[in-house]
Amino acid sequence: MARRNRCLIVDPDLPQAWHVSNRCARSLFLLEPEAQDRGDREPEDHRKELLLARLEKLVAVSSIEVLAFSVMGNHLHLVLRNVPEVGHAWSPREVLDRWLALHPLRNRQGPREPEAGELEALVADEAWVAATRRKLMDLSQFMKELKQHVAVAVNKLESGSGAFWSGRYKSKPIDDPEGHQLVRSMVYVDLNPLAAGLCDRPEDGRHTSLEGRLGRDQPATPQQAEPAERAPTAAFRRSRSASWLVPLAGEDPRSRMHEAARAASAAVPAAGRTVLAGLTLRRYLRLVDAVSRLLRAGKASLDRRLAPILERVGLGPEDLRVGFARMATGSPHF
Image (cartoon, rainbow, N blue to C red; front, side, top):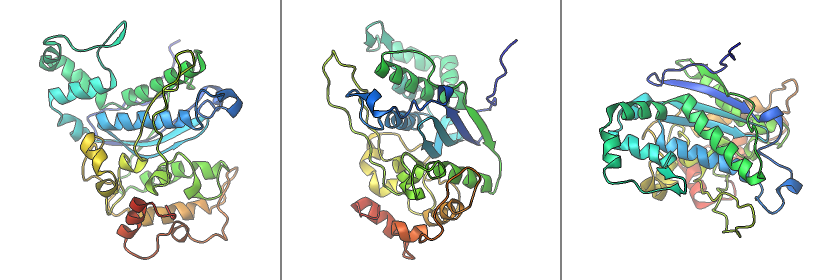
């Protein structure tokens, strides 16, 4: 009997948001191996950083935006949104360049330079361009590119093989014009570390979009070259997550904090877009704080005696731009 497809078939030509999740195989903590298993092969949180670096690269080349994420030890949550008008605006050459950023031309020895006229032939092939454009706008392809990259990289680290992810990803479409379900999904995702008891306050959760929006995440840096006889860690670099997340309303943190990064890459999929009109960082933080104080069966919650989150992170009644200025200058609050 054919296996039932648990992923919705979605039309990449239609705007859509989804809450996507995927567990590691057998719910093992494969994204967070124990220290004794790492040895000297990989730094702490290397696998989560590797996943986020790949996610950033996919955002840079696809028409799919990331609104929220949480990378846990044994599973992943994402809130994604497709913007088809972005993909349809690409020229045939842009489609080729974006695809080659993910899949460079190769031979048996590895990446290779294109032969004379090879790229021009691909750009002129209307069928290839149309099929590739669709892949760069497709949720299933986006998740395949993310999951496969992480699985292959971790198997290389462990010098092993086998399934890394527990089957196909699960996707729940978010279909509410007013954005209530969208915001609820984002809050749920950002509160995963708190609900799991990994931190005492939402803003202290690691590897979440909330951490990135507050400027508290510390990006990875390329690893030093290692001897060939040792299992090398993958070299990668990612920007702060706030630089590739869709911004909240108000001042776009990318415009001040990441001007150099913006000039060097196409990491902003749709300039000027925000998560939801009127949803500022302050409002979102208040929602996160309110939900974190609710008692939920089997989930940890915030101590109700704690001060409001705006006081805890240093965002008072002053204009929001002051908060972003603190982020940019590295204030202890952020």
